[in-house]
Picture (cartoon, rainbow, N blue to C red):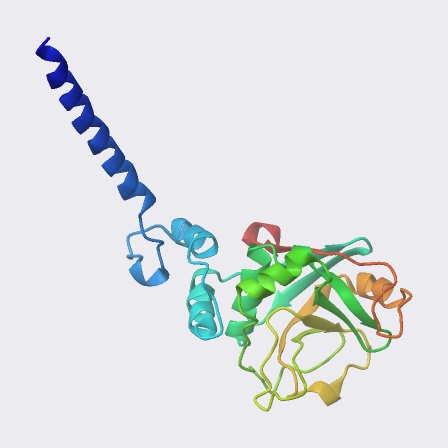
Length: 239
């Protein structure tokens, strides 16, 4: 009879120790870039940036994207639509806008969006939609903005990729991180130079842009039929 209390006491301590170990694992802090040490492999860091250090907001957007860009140096992406593919090259001399586009691509934000504005002989514009999933992303990241990165040699030529922005109450010409447009006019859109940041260009898929430009749109330039997109980063093996 005396043996039972001893057994129960032993089981109690074993159970308590086990719970304590589990709680340590559950309460492990989220890893930020500041706490990652150099010996950690680059692939592991990139995974944690996109999956765990998921805190970009209005206050830290520039610092976040600067660090993100240092770890994610890709410069080519491809947009797939029902009309075909558009391959883009992002400029290294607009590092914050480049990193932002890569970041939003990798977290699949653009896959929730459409080409939602089409103005023939001007631009095709994408990066927004009326889906709840699109609005959820924007709310999560607090509708942050990007400082302009105007460069003399980055013009609004045919096929230029540029960032949209609010025109009113925006004296610093801050870019929207979510909305982008591609110049469809073959003569370019020089009146937009130094008004919007050009951060990339089309390198193939001009025929796809021309097909998009021909769709029927309403008075607000929104296509009658949605044009969803899928955006993927191309690595060195898929240039």
